Length: 113
Length: 113
Image 1: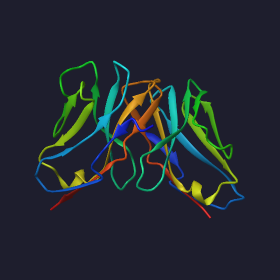
Image 2 (image 1 turned 90 degrees about the vertical axis):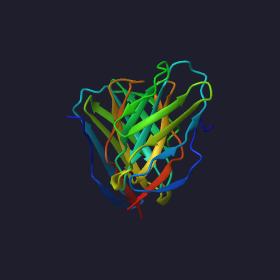
Image 3 (image 1 turned 120 degrees about the vertical axis):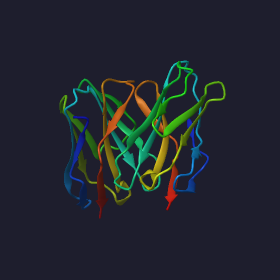
């Protein structure tokens, strides 16, 4: 199983809503990542978790709150988002930091209205 | 600072032709990994090919091969016998500091029938 599963695939939320994105992998990977991708742009790193601990926060606004409850699961909690936060949110995992390959999920297309 | 540069925003070739996508990068590290990822309309980032900097031999995966010029910090992707399914956005990437996967701006490749 070389799959990273993200749910939901699409999400529309209002600026006052609270929602969560979910990412799951069962490859035994110990590093997990959140990326944000705007239209026609490359993915940009948001957060890195290594062995369930936050390793990197790329100065992401606090309205994005990551959580890694166990080694297979990575969540991104969303609260009071702005329309400019609308983007594709990609989750990825790798065996460890600096591994030879990172596997990506299909992403969640988020629209903030 | 941009550490991965793709100078071709768009390319278009006929089916069965060979196409080369360019990528240059900046690094002070001696050993590192370089990647080409493909992102079709389905949105999922798919690893096409990987090159380890300490290996002088260029990586090859079926119809995909790279021309890795370490001294010039150049890493181009050659697609032979191109197929309609190769139509996608292609991103060159490398790990920065063993934790952060940094992408170029991407090249939109269209294979015409």
